[in-house]
Image (cartoon, rainbow, N blue to C red; front, side, top):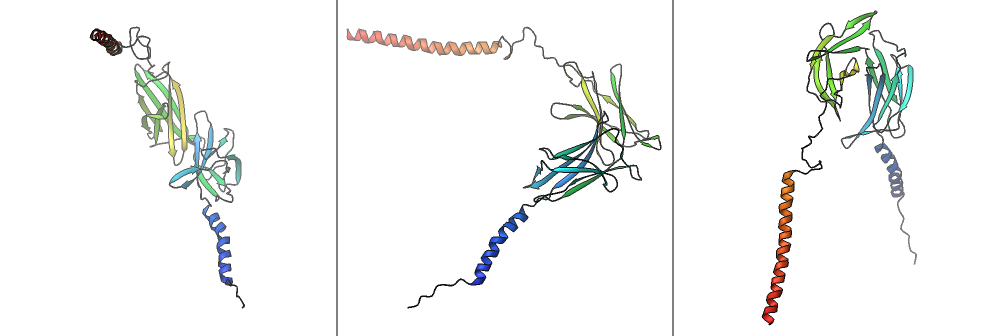
Length: 292
């Protein structure tokens, strides 16, 4: 008797091979990351200037930094001038310092043009960001007349070797605290690019009463982030010294209420022990009298 072996149709085998080979392709497509890239400009009071790029991506509604990625920084209208490269840190941030003597080309409107670029790799798409900045000079003068402390601000740009006032802009004033900046007020620049603000007299300072006062443009669409800061003795020194007769949990002499409460509790506990011992002795004597 002839036994026929079952045959698997060819198209079943073909379909199985296609499904097996397509799995890595689909998984590779799913791992492609579309990053977000931003570019910012910072100018500090000591003429320290730098541009900063942040490279992140979104996953499950969370912004996750991309660290160890090489970012190239460019300047010029078409980004033809390579300034340098930097790697992103654990927060996805890469920065490039702009020395004070670095000559940067400007466009017809007098703006510096910057750009940052990430070339991409096998799992992350390429990305780039551009930024145009106008150089601005922010000055701060601190003065005191009697008990009135005043912050005077002036902001201007340069054009044709002349000072051009920055009018109708807001400058924020802060004092650094432990984890953030404490807003002190905001100054509105007039048509001459000047403004003044009265400083409060009740802010705590360090052990010597020193405070750091910061005035800044924040995320300005034309100036970027520009700040000036100065340390001055306008704060209230802390008073942490405790009086000699002061009683507290952290002093050598405990508070009276604690001593009285503890004495009452200990008296009650030892009183119960004494009562129990006397009762046992009495019970033992009574038992001996009954036996006699």
